[in-house]
Image (cartoon, rainbow, N blue to C red; front, side, top):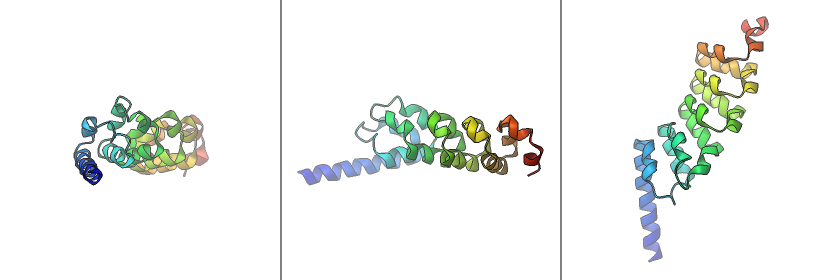
Length: 148
C-alpha cells in the first residue's frame, strides 16, 4: 500500500513538473504539498519569471519568494526577475550579475551599492549599453570609468 502511495506521489509530481515546464503559472493548480518542492518552483520561475509575483499568494509557497535558489533560477532565465526578488537578493552580487548578464537593463533593479560597482556596471553595459543610465551618478561622472 505504501509503495502505491509513493508511486502515485511520484507520478503526480512528474505531471505537475511537466505542466509548469509548459506554463509556469500552472503551479497555481498544484497541491500545496508540492509547492515546497524546490525543483518544481524553480522550473515554474524559469519558464516564466512573473510566477515569482504569484508565489507569495500561494499557501505553501510563500517562502519560495525569498529563496536564493529560486531567485537565481528566475534571474538566469530573465534578468527582469530581479525586480521581483527580495531586497536582500537585489543586493546579492551573484544574483545581480546573473540578471545583468542575461539582460543589462536589470541593473535598474539592483541595490544601489551594486549600481555603484564598476565591475557590475561594466557587465550590464556589455549586455545592453542603455544600462549605463542606471549606474550610480559617481560612476557616470568619472571620466576614467567612462573611458573603459
